[in-house]
Length: 430
Image 1 (tube, rainbow, N blue to C red):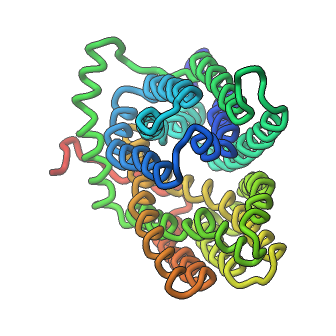
Image 2: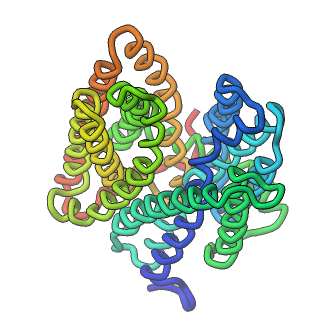
């Protein structure tokens, strides 16, 4: 029974979805103008690629420590710190005009993304289970996929509208969406302070010191869970294939589209509305998650979607003409949107609350080196053979992850009840 004044399952879900949408709206505003604005401020494409590495390296280095800190200290303070850092990075982005300043911007973004990765989702699951231990939180995770698609798509469309307004006084057209993103992030931070309620037994400086000391232990426990759970290890391993294969539709698609259109500038013009449509398709895919859960279950549904996504990538690589490529691209994002909630739900079923964010960070971290490897291998393959061939190889990698959902499916069949979390010993494994 919930404590007096505690949030209900519906209230938790509404707050989570509100905060989730506000979190991604600034990203939608920034996506269409980030590269163009840095070029306008004097950076070359190689320099832009180099400053972007600051984010990737810091996310990889800090993903686990920040996940452990969120589990030990609490999700609310970590999310507040992340929001403040994002606000600072956007403010600096609005006025940056040199390689060094943009490098600092992306370094701040790396720290922000490491802090932001997992705590909100973990809060939602724990708060839902606190309100009702039998609640199905997968519904909210599915709705979150719809929200992120809508927020990014709406932000991208608003960004285009602001650019179309042209310069306003001394502010360039490309800078207007950045100022809007700053405002949106400030609103998101205020909403976080008001809506995210978390009960913690201790606060203040002593609690902070104790939480920092506990964070390595949280990480150790999370890694220990992987060693003891074949189901959890298989689910986290899916990210290796996912990260490698995602290069096909995140990096190779523009090259493939330019190839079939025959004009890079025309292809770039098509990609603007296509990106917005892709996120809307992702939102639609996430919306069907409850149907997939009822129809075939989480693990079989997730496995089926891995194969279907591989099929859509094959379509992007082999279909002729821009229409065929873009239809396959939209289908790929629809499958992508449906896959995320199922995978996340399976992951949450395998871990107790105190280590939830650390495990999410482990899962997320796996995609970083896999994506880097995929970027090197698939682009080299594309140069040596063709873009279509590289996309087919990436599609196969995406599809062969499907059997990794088999342990979760078998574990679910052995018990009518949800799979019990793996027992965690009192001492940290070394």
